[in-house]
Amino acid sequence: MSETESTGVEDLNRTLGLVRRIEMSPEGRATLEYEAGLHMCHSGGVVQGGFVTGWIDAAMAHAAIAMSGPGIVPMSLELKVSFFAPARPGKVIAEAWVEKRGRTTCFFEGRLLDPAGKVLAKASSTLQMVDRTKVEAASRAAAG
Image 1: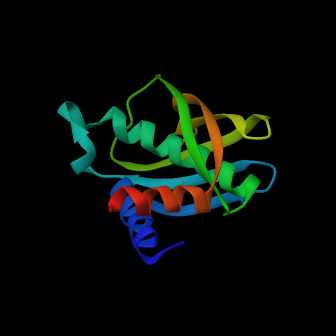
Image 2: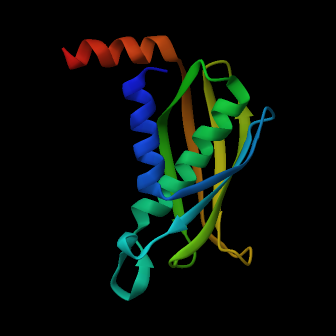
Image 3: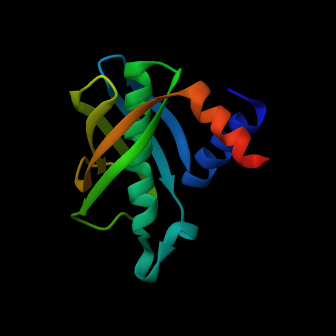
């Protein structure tokens, strides 16, 4: 991972409010803890849906990396989120797991929970597993 990419990941984690990685297992599971802040909310103290989506999406990416190793970049081909209850400021837990693993395309599911274990949202994603060196080379080429 390049220095610029490392900084980008750290910035993303800070923006999303990552507190800690609770679990990352080679079976394709990940659990992450986030702190939802007031700056993430719209009217009525409800966390904006993009953050909810980002938390679950990040958990699915972590599950993919735990399963396939750091040499891959999970690229989203499709992402669907269903919202069941509002996320509020405070701790939330994003869980994700692989549903079906293919050679280059995998299917993941995830959910967001409040501290009491109530499901706030669920998601499914189709991820293409791309060689990290190819992604980095394409990024360098695009940068000029």
